[in-house]
Image (tube, rainbow, N blue to C red; front, top):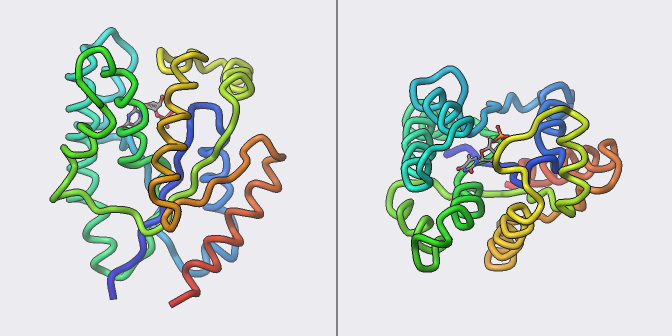
Amino acid sequence: MRGKLITLEGIDGSGKSTVAKKLQKNHEIRAFEPIFTREPTRDTLTGNAVEKAIQSDTDQLAELFLFTADHAEHLAKLVKPALENGKTVISDRYSDSRYAYQGITLKNRIENPLEWVRSLHKGWTIVPDLTFLFDIEPEIAVERCGKRGEQTKFEKIEFLHGVRENFLRLASEEPERFIVVDASCSPENVEKTVVQKILEFVQRD
Ligand code: TMP
């Protein structure tokens, strides 16, 4: 049986990566031996290209194609084989990040960019079975990023408002796939909710 694909999404500073790390240490989650991964990928040709692009003044369209190339590589080398082997895959960011973020970076270049970016993925991507959206006010999220000393060009409040709106739109379009988590709660509560929902989901069938 094909494995399940679970993704974690949210704006920068939503606490999603912290929860991803906690999940890796959680005994109940580890019991079903999931594969933990992320986008952009790390230590790969495409992931390195994305990292350089994020840190510089790269053309937004070029940036979209780098993120998308990284997704294709991630799918081919890790996600698809793991799912075919019946493994559960948990990815910290995935295609919805592209729809939400590049849906904003391209807004002055492309008409209806969210739809357009989504259409570029049709026919070859694998749609997740379950997606957690870590929802939070950008003001709180940016303060968290500031405290960690991480400021990238994507962490501007106004920009993040647009990204958050896009994520919420995606979640409202597919309520059966998305679970929206209030990420302003304590990290312990957020982790507890996510663990419980994942366990319910993997034990369902
Ligand atoms: P990270 O902080 O999760 O490592 O992600 C790096 C940044 O890249 C983050 O600001 C979100 C952004 N991003 C996109 O703009 N498009 C994408 O497709 C992905 C995966 C991430």
